[in-house]
Amino acid sequence: MPLSPPIKRALVSVSDKRGLSDFVSALVALDIEIFSTGGTRKHLESAGIPVRDVAEYTGFPEMMDGRVKTLHPKVHGGLLCRHDNPSDMAALAEHGISSFELVVVNLYPFAETIAREGVTIAEAIEQIDIGGPSMVRSAAKNHAFVTLATNPEQYDTILAEIRADGATTLETRRQLAVAAFAQTAEYDTTIAQYFAKINSTTDDAEYSPMVQLSLRQRDTLRYGENPHQSAALYAFPSASPESLVNAEQLNGKELSYNNLLDLDAALAIARSLPTPGVAVLKHNNPCGAATADTLAEAVSKAWDGDPLSAFGSVLGVNVPVDGPMAEFLAEPGKFVEAIIAPDFTAEALQVLTTKPKWKANVRLLKTGQFPEGNGAHVFRQIDGGMLCQTADDLPDDSSSWKVVTEAQPSEKLQADLAFAWAVCRFVKSNAIVLAKDKSLLGAGAGQMSRVDSVEIAIRKAGDRSQGSVLASDAFFPFEDSIEQAAAAGIAAIIQPGGSRRDAEVIAACNELGLPMIFTGIRHFRH
Image (cartoon, rainbow, N blue to C red; front, side, top):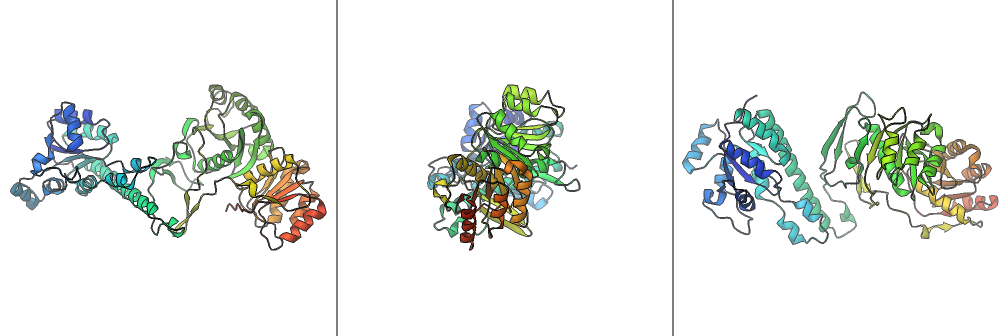
């Protein structure tokens, strides 16, 4: 693998100074001359490291509060010269330009600045780096001859190669160039999105005419939905610490593609439930969900929603998993693939990692406190493009719900209707949910006919449908499902309303003595 020219000079200019003094001290010990600017130079000098001032080297002082300091031919000529091109090297000699074989640069903290509450546009603008990206691009373009560090995590690899051979390998320099171009692309994307947001003045401007998505690979997965598909996990740089991609795995095998999809759904459902709440997921649909006075009671009720489907499920829990819940899951005949929760008590960890047969395999993910929904933009890929919409993760305003029937739901039925409605939005459409005592009893998911979904939910609930409530993610176009519900002993219904035949559906409920609530909002989940 071809080595770079011997590294004789390094240009250093960074905002992130983690590990910098140790790295540069090691370079100086290897007889590498250091050139630096502004705050970086002062930082190195305060550590006793000999540094040449770039302004002294170029003969041109820093100006405009540091806005102009490295935009000079004696800097970029030293970065862009091709060491195997005689005319390039002759130009260096003619103009008194030194070549830089190593560049250590990272950028002004623009993303961190705009994340601060109350930051002004003027403050944000001053954190738009100009010289940094220019040096990064010059060095990355010329990576055949220049080694480029844009992240402190790269220092050890670079230093090890220099110590071994006085230079770096072409493979390393190419990898560093890829990382550098990805960083500048992400940086410019963040700036573009910021200005698009602050320039939005109408509802139409909520969606920018051009969107650049910046994602960082977090992991390579064993395979995708099926073994013949490859897969990887990527994260948005702005992902919150409490998000799934940043969850801390405390135990178990590596996560699979399907695990992550189920965990994402489990996290969303658990977040929407009153505490303490448990959601049991299978194939991205809830097969159980419940809230109760204790977590042990909640998980028992959630598991009993559909014990057959719960075997090998993924669980979402909205409070720290405790010992009694862990003991319930460790009972013979139960098996879970993964659990995501804000935290796990020491007792719960001890039980889950020592008692069940599946103790070594269960994935336990700790997120910290669940964040509230914020209606942020979410993307979904389709053939040739992406769809974008606001996330359906904001709580509904129950004060706008209307009882449209003569019969009024009791206080207990109202509580069950609210619970069923919270769960229903996370069931694939056409979605029907039966619930009782704040516990999911049966769900009909992903059917082409709402009648079929009602039949499946009733069949899942069995005799438990007596006295339960029914939630539908969209309106009933005909009264046939109402008649099915009444025949199964269902005591109340909640649905969005909005059908041309609402009057007929209401009349059917009145005839059967069923109370029904219209929410005025639909929750399709395709």
